[in-house]
Image (cartoon, rainbow, N blue to C red; front, side):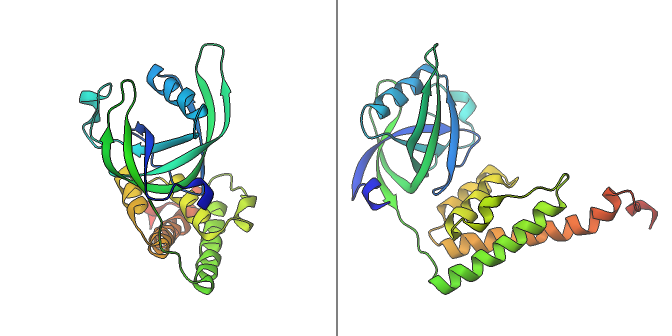
Length: 222
């Protein structure tokens, strides 16, 4: 990853969205249709292929086509695949590389750019990382089994701790501000423990309700 992350401060094109928090070591499919973001993709493809995904703050609707307030921390992605459609829209796949912090927004005529710095995060020692990964894998399997039409996720066996934690955060039904708070954590172990505790809480509720979903009983009749 070091070759893909600039040292020190660098310029980054920003793609603010109101409903998405993107994480490193995950992949994000995007459909680009607004003219300003079509231009962003065109410019990225002709240079460094970098796009900074960042969450809009609440109240964005009053100035969406201007420059509504954004959070300070986002994730830089590299364009991994791109298809330009006949009408000028794009379908692309973004590979999450690193978190970044905005130092200062800079002028750009059509879309927003900023001077940013990459945000590395503390990783647990290998033994601790292995134990946490095994814990999360077991919780994830139990969680998937209890979902309606339970299914397997083969990537569970191959994902490293960061990929697993961040993919879980992106897929779980959490408030956007909760996800943003988890992104801003500088310690991977803390993010992992938060996600694991959340899964344990949900598993307790799902386990309790499972017999009633199968029609074996009804809570109101106890």
